[in-house]
Length: 396
Ligand SMILES: [Zn+2]
Image 1 (cartoon, rainbow, N blue to C red):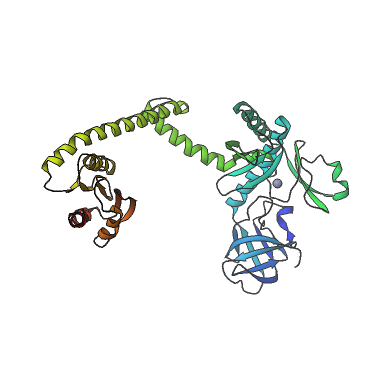
Image 2: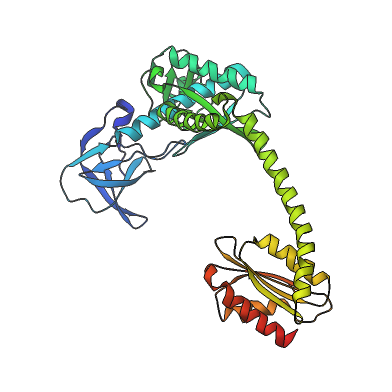
C-alpha cells in the first residue's frame, strides 16, 4: 500500500485539505480509502482517530495499515478530488490531552522517578500507568502542581525529525519504539518524547491538568487525568453537584464529604434498626393471623408491606404451627409473592413457580419451604395469591 503524506505532522491545526484517492478497499464491511495525503490522525500510540468527513461522508474510523492511512467511510465516495474536514472540537481535545500527557509524564519522572509505562486516551478520561507502587496525596499534588506550572509558563512545543543514529543526542524520556527517522516532540527544555501524535504549539493551550482517581494495576499505579476542556467540564459538573449538597447540608462545598458520610452511616444504622423492629412486629402479627386462620393455608395481599416485612411475617407464622402461607407484598412498584411453609408440611414450594406462572408471568425462586416470586404487573397480585392458595389447599 502507498505511504500517505501526513499533513498533521506538518500542521496539527490544519482542519481542511484536498487529496486524491490512491486506493479503495473494504474494512469491517465498510468502504475505505487511502489518500495521497491526509490530515486525519489514525488510531495509534494511545490516541484515538480524528472525526470528520471526506466530501461530506462521515469518516467512521481511521486506521494505520503498512505505512498508509485507511479512512473507513459511512458510504462509498464517488471518483474525483476529495475534500477532507477534521472535526475541530475533537482535534483540539486530543491535542490538549496528548500534550498534557507528555507534561504530566515528565512531572512524574522528574519528581518521583515514576516511569510512564502506558497511556490511553479515552472518550471521557485518559489514563497513565506509572511505575510506582504507592503515592501520597501530597506527592500527587506536587506532580500536578509541577505539570501545571509548565502549562502556565506557556512553553513552546516543538516537533522535529531525528535520524535513528543521532537519537542518542536527544534526552528522550523513554527509548523509542520505532526505527528509522524518528519524530521528536519537545516541550521546550522539559520533555523529549518520540511521538507521532497531534500536539498543541504552546503548553498554555493545555489550559489545566487535573489528576483524578488512582488504581493499582499489574503492581503499578494507573492515574486518570483530564486536560483543558475536559478538566473544565469535570470541574463544572462536580462543582454544581458539590454546591447542591452543600446547600442541603448548610456547609461549605469543599467540606461536604463529612456530612454525607455521617448521613450514610446513620441511614445504615436506621435500616438495621427497622429490620429488627419489623421482625419483632411480625412475631406479634403472626399470632393474629393464626387466631383468625380457618385451616392450614393462610393467604392474602398485604397492601402496606414491603417484601421483607411480608417474608418476616410469613416465616413467623410458619414457625408457630403447621401452616402454609401465601402473601402478596404490594408496597413496592413490582408485585412480590412470598410463599412459606412449616417444616412439618411436605409440598416443595418451588413447584408453585409453575402453578402461578400459568396465571401471571413470574420470576424468582428459593428453597422447598420458602419461595419469593416477582411479577411486573402488581395489579395481578391477587390472582397470583388465589392460584397459589388453591394449590396449597389441595396439596398441603
Ligand atoms: Zn505525543
